[in-house]
Image (cartoon, rainbow, N blue to C red; front, top):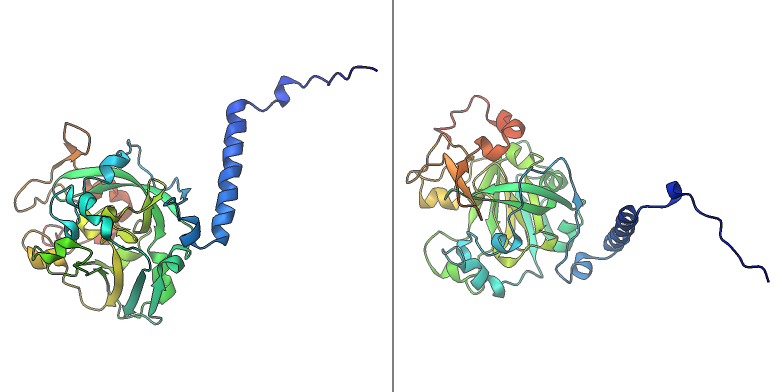
Length: 311
């Protein structure tokens, strides 16, 4: 019997191993994404994983802050005022079932359950800087989509000038609310054009996972050109208003925390300079960037405004 000898394959026709592996990984991701599209998030995200398509338009050329630091060094006063308190105390927060009520100056007020929200638009991975008023900062790969997608669904009226965010108020789950450090529930707000800006992210995860409780689970906003406290966490209500809302930190310290709270190295906090910041994990401080480095994208929102008066 003749021995079969395969025809030699030219080297140019052989797929290099790295490319083969990338293709195989792509097919695995694509298959997973197809399955995710068919299943409700309560099923496909049961293991806390959350897939998002990387959006190259939203990234920064900086090293990511390690996951451990992102999830263990937080401001979330509902769970305590120490930076490590949220990670220690947020384990009891029940994030399902969860609904977000959208009301006020809108034509279509609605109550959205979490699964509906998460399927409203394609989840993207966006790498944003986060700058906190205490002069520390992080670089985080967030997962979500532009808040504008939700706003379009509810159709704001002509009277809607501002958007107010209301966080969960439940002292049985959030021990920090047993104190009077802030007036509860936590409230934050944006001008409607700020809320509609493509950078403003309705956020469900980070680092390929659903948001940990200490980072604002199950849904928060991320407004990367403002100080971190403007990015409301564990949101249960969104209200569209004609008048500027009074936010929690404005109420607590009106001379220190203004409504806009844009990252601005030329406007100091009442008790410390904002000219420099310390990236978590680094020893040396770096210069604070105007609008946290998003000046090109958002400066037009404030044309003609006195940013010292409107701090």
